[in-house]
Length: 209
Image (cartoon, rainbow, N blue to C red; front, side, top):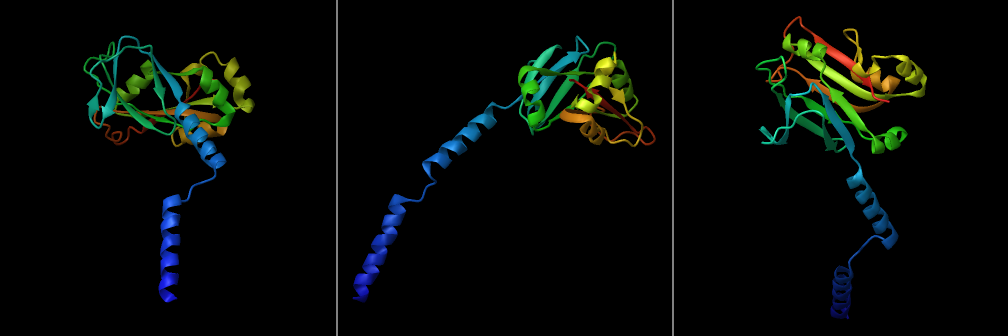
């Protein structure tokens, strides 16, 4: 009798392994749909200025694409991912080599439709480049302004150039307070060392909508 019980238990064990355990078909289909949708999400970014400079993107640690491009040039970026680029041949800035880092923020439902149909314009102004030459670390946050600040943005002729913040103000916190963040650009010297003592940092927030 004991032997019979052991055999039954063994057969049940084998049957469970053979059949396996799986999620209901509806749950599997839902999970597959979510994964497919996640793969389709991206943020378009267009580097617009200065014209004539050369841009290469990092394909793996320390290795950049062999084919450099010039502005305006667009990139399809994945939300939640950080990218690094190499910028050379900047007009009027002989010998300057930059390694900007771009962090792509997750797409918030509030701006999902805008992101689907628009590209985020990114540029380096003369003021940006001068600050970098002086050894300052530049942080630019690109965001869509909320309803409370949109009228102010629309009335400002130079809004696309961004707002330079006073020292000590966190640009990410400030942009998040005023709207929804798309991208954060950080750029300094070629070796990406911290800014020189006493030089501080230059923080800018740029509304794109």
